[in-house]
Image (cartoon, rainbow, N blue to C red):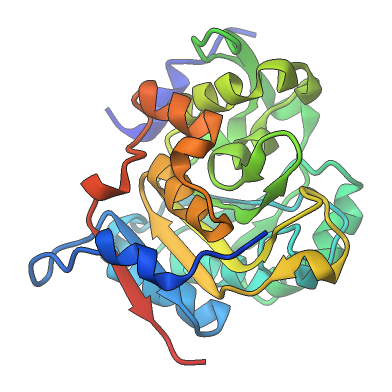
Amino acid sequence: MDRRKFLLRSTVAGGALLTAPIFDTWWQKGRAGEIPDLVMTRGGKPRLATKEAVAALGGMERFVSRGDIVVIKPNIGFDRQPEQAATTNPEVVATLAEMCLEAGARQVKVFDRPVNDPRRCYVQSGIEAALKPLDGVELKYVDDRRFRDMRIGGQVLTTWPIYTEAMEADVLINVPIAKHHGSARLTMAIKNWMGIMGGNRSRIHQRLDQALAEMAAFVKPTLTVLDAHRILVANGPQGGSLDDVRHPEVIIAGTDEVAIDSLGATLFDMKGGDLGYVRKAAELGAGEADLNKLKLREIPLSA
């Protein structure tokens, strides 16, 4: 059963950066030509790092076929500029969109459901300007009429209004930024799905970890690319002060968002198990949180 058919069956009618040596126990070279579970680039400009990370996973052609409709879901939640590290790096988003077109995508849609005014968020994030030159790419505002109650089947989220354009796409690419969050501790891949949730999202905050884990088990992204070129280490998720921004110049890519969040947590001197929603998502079978069980590849890039 393909991704679209599987998901549509669920529709209901109607501060401190971690230093490099700790990775030595995880990185496995693997056999020549073997595709790793996770790729992490270090250094380099966002465009080059994004291209290298996806190439190491087998290239965008592994994920996108000719004629596909692709949805790219970045974090554009706040009225912040790229330097403030509250929204996904525009170069990462534009590079992924361009790669999708090169792989044969018929259309690429990019959207989020921001907390602040969407018009300002799209402009201030730099994403609107970055995507403008790309024919076949549409930066869209979320239309409330396109949310539909879907059966999540969880303890907290039995049903919830989910944005249909995300769920009906042939290819769904999650492109979060790694940053501090006051309630969840960190927001990365899994929490980025709040941007396709409708309704009153504040209702889930009393059992936030469980709700996020249930979303991770429900949504099936084709590819996840975590932007950690800049990260926000305090006063997230909105931030605002450049004093709270660090520059690890890291991109992490893979198909398992639980694993990606586990690796991303190490950039904040944490483990995946320190995040309640990562632990619960792994328990629900949404992915692998134990990095020792995964094949990982690190790619150092020059500036």
